Length: 628
Image 1 (cartoon, rainbow, N blue to C red):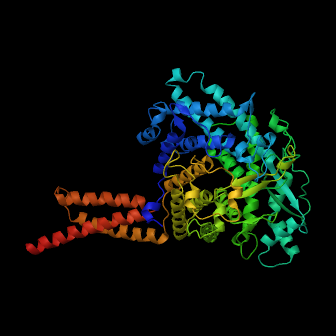
Image 2: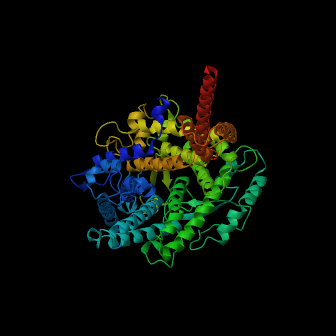
Image 3: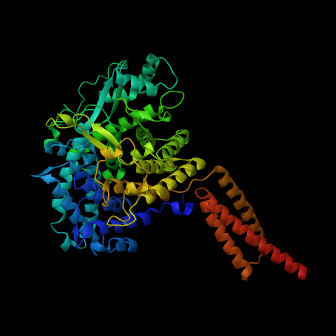
């Protein structure tokens, strides 16, 4: 491992480096070039654009809308776009919206992100299937785009001549896409009842029953702990209902979350007049951990206070937003309860996590950890939960070879290359085609993002320090996986170079994309998300320990008392350097008093300096008296 200095996360510098590398890779001769390693599709192209637009709308100092206010280092990183960076970004955003709209109907096809195993190819109809990832990315992109347009309007009040007639068409397309994405997410939410006697029920019980209790007792305990979630799912979740779910029978287990797309037989949404509100769904009626996290991340942007404050939503969208926020809350509560179920060892601590279909992977444990942290972010957090979750992150980092050495023929390699293959149940009924798969290879970025979020939440110095240290090591791992040369230099993911050991279990046969020196926007955009989270975490005031604050206050009182004694010895007409020195010490102590609660370490240092200077003045006075 490199030294600590090399591992430090510096969000501003790293985001600007990505921006420079991105434009070197995909902006030539004034033309934006879509597509990366996975080709061009509605998700990859949104991820590519979000690499710029997301930080520009989340971090004030990265704002691009006003050419007169763009920071110098930001202007330098984006210099290929010219002086009017905001207008050029607006052009690219509009280009994306038009690429993925046909006759006013937004397109959410996953296309080249959908794969099947060797010997088969997806049909054209299968490539056109919508997936939750596209809905979620579009939600984030459209909200960022609407916020960006609002900022441009403010500039346009002064420079209307170059904005006239430009914003309105883009805003209309953004709103159409946003509404459709929200409808897609509502209709992709699923609640599934599971009989404890079935194979799926037995797997769920095996994860919940960490104390070898009677199965009936575990089912009853689950019913009690999840009663609030169950009753709200039964009573409050309107607009769509999942077919065949039975929430009345407390003898049944259940799970909730998002499937990979619109669920088969999902009910129509009758108050929105768009094709997606009534189109036929194909996804199996069961939740996927990965797609649940993807949906929650998108909806999280929707629930932020600024979305309401900026009045970004119309009446229909607000109704859809309320429906999504309810599902967002219940899904987080459900998985957070499942992760910590029982009075003994948490199910989450029983690594790897097994999903109801019997599949198990360290990736699924990381997903459930992410869902737990997402829930803790949304409500009052217990430091005990964070302290207990920290060793889980450490263990997952080691097991995933993020902080430990990759061995020869290491099976952990498949977590990153090619990633975990998720079968999209129901995709095979489209044109009688092959079963499609979704490959997820974001193990390290997900670990980094959730570790940073946990560190931001922690109120315990030792826990926060341990989480930040893990985050720094994970960032170091990711930096090593960036391309070192070629057209994608400075971008991700050069996993084949990093994981140089031979693949095992015929991983290469299932590799989702051809080896390429093109950037993965899927991976690079997730690094950007991590850096935005890091920027937020660093902007929070530092943690203080009660002992540090108490010690600082002791020093402050001592220094203040000694300073008052020195002032008693001065004449009001004394304008010597001695008085000026005491006045400077007084200013230092006033600053220390202002910092003592929020920054006790800084206050401690100021008080120590003041005491040293007071001692020097006292020594000089005594020495002068002895000389006389």
